[in-house]
Image 1 (cartoon, rainbow, N blue to C red):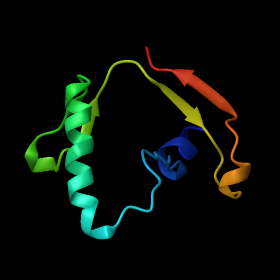
Image 2 (cartoon, helix red, strand yellow; image 1 turned 135 degrees about the horizontal axis):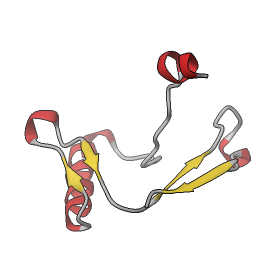
Image 3 (tube, rainbow, N blue to C red; image 1 turned 90 degrees about the vertical axis):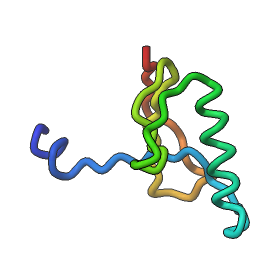
Image 4 (cartoon, rainbow, N blue to C red; image 1 turned 60 degrees about the horizontal axis):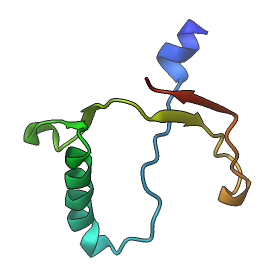
Length: 81
């Protein structure tokens, strides 16, 4: 299991699925980063393009995504507290 976790596990973190117009992606990204900052979530420096590096609370849901979206169903949920 340790080898799998270190070498093969590639988690998928989805924050947004949308049909955003490609010309508006940067604008939406900036709006999202502002919302994140206002919520008190730590956001990385400009050098790392605003990557999120920490937050408090929330939860992680494990959802197999090999089926169509309509068939997605969480198989595990864990609070981040």
